[in-house]
Image 1: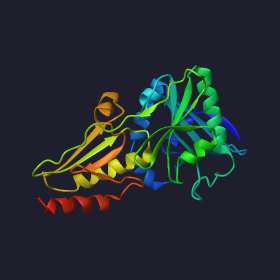
Image 2: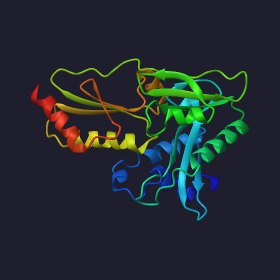
Image 3: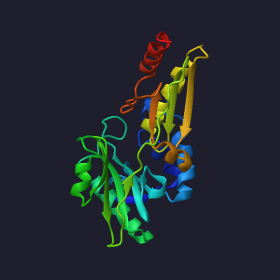
Image 4: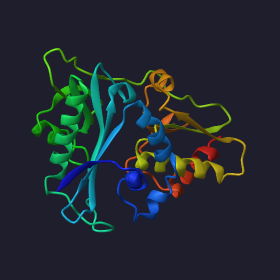
Length: 262
């Protein structure tokens, strides 16, 4: 395999997480592309993994921790590592060491940039971005939020400072006489963008002024720190699970249920 920097001709592929075959990905719109256009000017780095035939099969994106859901100093933060694992499209490339190679390349790059360590988020359950996998690569727990979200880090020097999660500071409140959908959307993840787009379309399908949609752009650091929600969708103050993204039909059914209670 070969690890390379993202080139301009591969940006569209990167923005759909290598899933250019997926019709579902198209539903997420251009939010990831707009996020990338801003983030690359703030220090975002992207590397791709190519197999021996030159097929792009994996990716890692990482940037200054100041543009992440964590707080820290002089660290880089891994937004995600993804090795294509579906039979559709380019095929399953997992289990070949591409993830480790991408992580190693990113760490070497971060060291060269002069940061004191690397941070990453992981899940405590054995799915995508497993905390246990990062621990095998030498990372250790820095913080934990709720039952699932683990903040991990690998210091490069003795003076590295441990990062911490930025926790929610306030929640959207129900408004009497309305059904309100509030979407916190950062833009970095097409799956999260898809959930937001489906929520927006579900709201717009109602010919009823009492159904309201509001999007809060958490790529704006001020907005994120104020609220503390990176990517989330709330219906009348109650968070809706967005992993995997709910269908538009499910969102519409949830809204209809709330409307009947007005």
